[in-house]
Length: 308
Image (tube, rainbow, N blue to C red):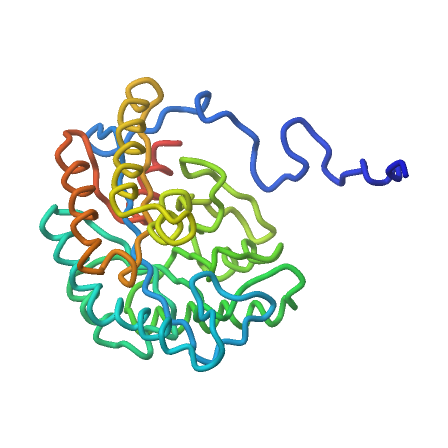
């Protein structure tokens, strides 16, 4: 059967994109970005501090990294808890050893349940961004807009109160959004979101509530994705991160500053058989000149300044 002609009708048919939320552009043709002190690569290490409920509902889909067996899935639940009680301290030690400045993406429910983690981050002075309410509270297509706004409001308000920070960055649980999510985030004071992974560099994103910046947090370079989804070894994880850094470092000579965004999880890389590979990666990156280790918010601010 031939396709109905309406199949080819788009509300925003235009060159490059069929929507107007951001401009289509080739990365190589954009205005070069200048990082502070003329750094070639800005390094953003994003640590996911997540709470996965034991009584997971999985509606309308199971959370990425969530429970997989029948209730009670203590095997996976306690592994996630291990990361927030044991693995996280190995990560902090590695960051301090190599003078790497991490950013912490925190579920608000976790901040309520693990005050010692929030207090430790506050003492360190690291940036906290909101990772939604908890990992089984997704944002998704078809979600009632009032329901989603309530979820965003309680997540942001709660984390701002507990952290004492303005909290202007956002990562949805499982990086999932509805069509309304960007506008709701902008409405509630979020300056940048990290769910869209269609680029290597930040870019402006238009919403009905004003502009927000898309800060791509690579899934391809995420520890869980490489080692658990792709079933690659710890050594292969390190090789891939190092290869990505080396390429971006060289590319910056021709096209301006680049950003290396690494997503890590204490329950994955905080294991004793894996932490050494994270240290190997950090040693390689920080062993190069012209590398700027910064928080997501600092990178966002520097990028915006560079675009003026």
